[in-house]
Length: 348
Ligand SMILES: Nc1ncnc2c1ncn2[C@@H]1O[C@H](COP(=O)(O)OP(=O)(O)OP(=O)(O)O)[C@@H](O)[C@H]1O
Image (cartoon, rainbow, N blue to C red; front, top):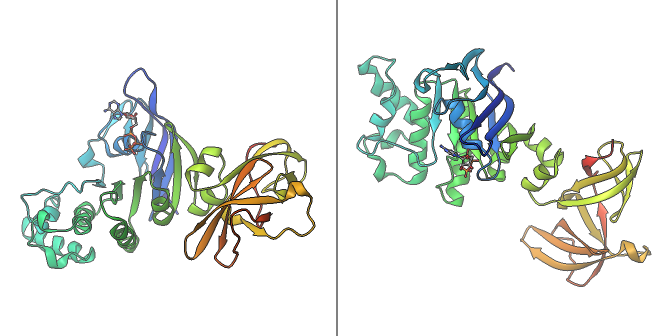
């Protein structure tokens, strides 16, 4: 797949406290949905605004299909970038009907054709029956689909989505997310989603850049960043995990307080590792040494699965099992790894 958007060493400071976007690099490919994921204040929205053209870059560049859009010496105006936006608060024009909202930006096509085309796009986003309504007569999810119709109607090469689902309740958020993804994929469009919600990024994007403190810590597919985090921050931000130290001796196995465990690569020396709770399971003790036997200290029953909190040698571990593995608090248990642990630091 060809690169569509290329962001190189992009840097922005608002004051002397230092850059809020600090030398980020990534590219978005054609037909790709990409997410910038990170905690509040890490610089996601500022990155998006630099790409959109609402902020000026201090260093680095943004280019689309090889055309420079932004650098310290160059600035293409937002409306000339071929980029569409969908914001958190939908930002529909309240005094215009749904169809007029969508037709508004279609200045490149003759006036008499604008409504015909706007109707076509509204049908594509499932809003064909609501053309005459005003935005305040729509639910949040419907407004969001109109906002998407308006953003994609001028056929932008790239659509920027800034926390577009965060004003929707949990149920509607999930369905709207699925629908929007399907619409973008069907239309062969590329999109950049900004979110602090890891589940949203994991389920919506083809690839994710995990951002912390103005920098990108890792770029990868949802599976890569979740199961093979490169840093402690990425491991912890993407979901619950167990972090532990170990002494590696040069091979791909290591003795840990959880017993002998495989590693994701050969390592030597002190290492910091991560293993997801669902990559561990529990068994009844059967002749293990006392230091290999832990105690269940709490249990979270969630219907189809269970998370156990287990104390072992003074450390707490999380173990996620299906609901057929039943232990009670105070039971003695042995923790068994089902997969390799991932090295986060050290080991070279
Ligand atoms: N116009 C501005 N002037 C000064 N500081 C700003 C400006 N815009 C953003 N900031 C600061 O830059 C930092 C990054 O903000 P940004 O909105 O990019 O973060 P974010 O990751 O999108 O956060 P959130 O998820 O809360 O929206 C924050 O500390 C913010 O206060």
